[in-house]
Image 1 (spheres, rainbow, N blue to C red):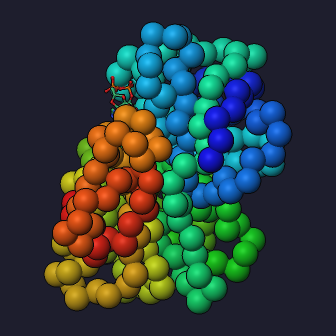
Image 2: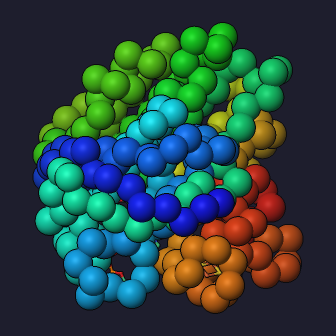
Length: 255
Ligand SMILES: Cc1cc2nc3c(=O)[nH]c(=O)nc-3n(C[C@H](O)[C@H](O)[C@H](O)COP(=O)(O)OP(=O)(O)OC[C@H]3O[C@@H](n4cnc5c(N)ncnc54)[C@H](O)[C@@H]3O)c2cc1C
Ligand code: FES
């Protein structure tokens, strides 16, 4: 983990209310990988705390993040221009990983939870994995990164809550509708808590013992394990999502 100054190469709307930023690293940074996140300053000097955003894609010299404009911090971030510099702490968190034997992978992303799933797809592209990807969005205007996900997945199912694009359902239900044919060795997921709860309940109800890992996007303060704003419960003990996660086995963590 290191604190560096990065130069913004691109920062533009991706779809309604979501922006994509590509920034340049001054030198290669060890350990940037799928499911990890960055803590990035908002660029306006008014916000003391950096904002945690998942790595969406990365190369040796660049990192791409995609963020929803939610409150004043991400609003300020959306006003940053190409050529501006930002302070950034990275890489943070434990990230997703796939073992050798985990060949068939189900990826379930809801809303901005699709971005960590894209990081898995791009890290493992061409490494002999089979990806069945399920993305859920509120409505058609929120659908994004479909082309990229399609290019990197064996199958991609895109659904919306209101049925304005794809089937009217959510990503978890779409996954369960397909689970028998997908035959996943492992399930990775990220999205709002109700979505992750539905996934946990659905697995239990069906007696499915497929290993499943989820990334939690808990409210954060420091992002480096010091303030305890992000604690959640894992097997009865308090853990910090920023330092001990954000990726946890679904059976171990209280949602
Ligand atoms: C590990 C991780 C990865 C994330 N990845 C993404 C991503 O790829 N794309 C994306 O759109 N969003 C992501 N989020 C959520 C994003 O961090 C919040 O939406 C953002 O911090 C909101 O800041 P704000 O100032 O606009 O909102 P405000 O609500 O004004 O924020 C006030 C404070 O609360 C914190 N906060 C508010 N909501 C969240 C939240 N959901 N998670 C963490 N801190 C929060 C802010 O950091 C800030 O300190 C991620 C969160 C975490 C923890
Ligand atoms: S955000 Fe401070 S301990 Fe996790």
